[in-house]
Length: 387
Image (cartoon, rainbow, N blue to C red):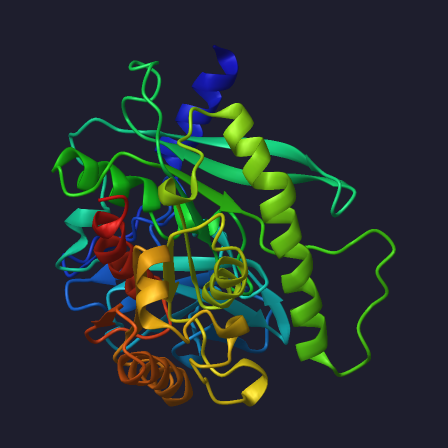
């Protein structure tokens, strides 16, 4: 009781800035933090206390990288131009030292725990919590003989999972991108709210969603040759493929009430996760029948062009056979993504079209290589599954 009273008094005694009606604290702030603040037109005000610093800069991963202005009270401030709706990673550089913003929650992105600010989107209702039946997200640890370690994953269970104990469910394996991890689709992507809202509206089949840690190595693996990042990535993708198919899928099917056949199993991923998805599913069509690539898929592997007649062991060579085995092939990209990314996805789409491969192609209007693109991708992809 005493501890609670002291905490409450401390909070009540904290100084409060004059409120600017145009700016409000971001939804991604820690409790009680007044900064970052977001305006109605998407500008973000940042503030950090560093009275002895000589210089402070803000670095948005995909956005402004600017000097902040020091005030007489030791606070450094900066206001961005209007940012696109969605989640934006950023860090402070104080006298050259990179640090997070203590007023913001941290998210694992860009290969580290970074601060992030959510700029509200006009269409955010589909990924926001609503007054509908809600599923649960559980953390699991599973043993892997492939890596010789215990591995971590997140699992979304649909709203009726614990009440309708006779029901069994199809499974979507949903992968994060490079520099992010298995928490990304829940914390940044809000996949659980997207699925809750789609299922409540009758727009998607109730399903289990498994989000695995996408990095893996075998016991005793030596580092790849210095400077050969592609060789390291391909080796990691092979190990992760074996881990997912030989360790994770059997664990999920043995632990949860799944529909275990290939007709009831899908895989999708964003960026790196999309490439992993294409690599795994096309080599294991005995396990998967629904495939999705969000800003990442069969884009030129190793810099080579995509040839449907020969790539991926020729699974695209016969359109009729492919359509018989694969119930859904989905690829998407944001219209404002880097040109190389857009060209790669468009090239894949055109190659599949010319080869007569039935697929869905989706473009997210006005979004970059970012979570707003991938939230929209999941919203379009999930209703097409298991129909």
